[in-house]
Length: 100
Image (cartoon, rainbow, N blue to C red; front, side, top):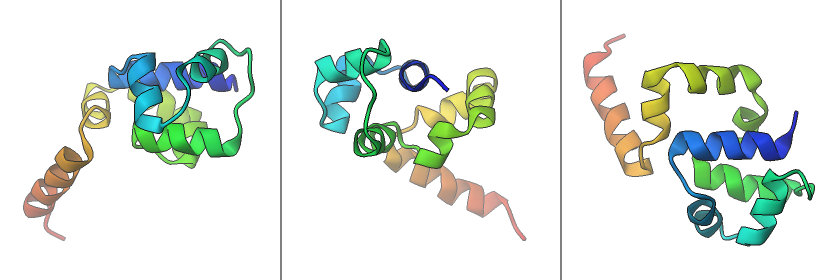
């Protein structure tokens, strides 16, 4: 897996600029750019900051099947663009219509 390419793909799916993701993750814009261009190899700590900012887990980051679903399913694309508060509201709503 090309880590930089995966970060860029997920970032663009969320509609984030490189600057916005770097700020949200608390990382250097230039370092993030170098990682996306595959000029630098990120640490796990760096990846965890990026994943937190993207609202995904490290497991999700490395799950290529999930990546394919995100890029092709408009519902999943919309969910990944939600803020944490919007995701919480969606879960509450889904719980009201989904009865076990």
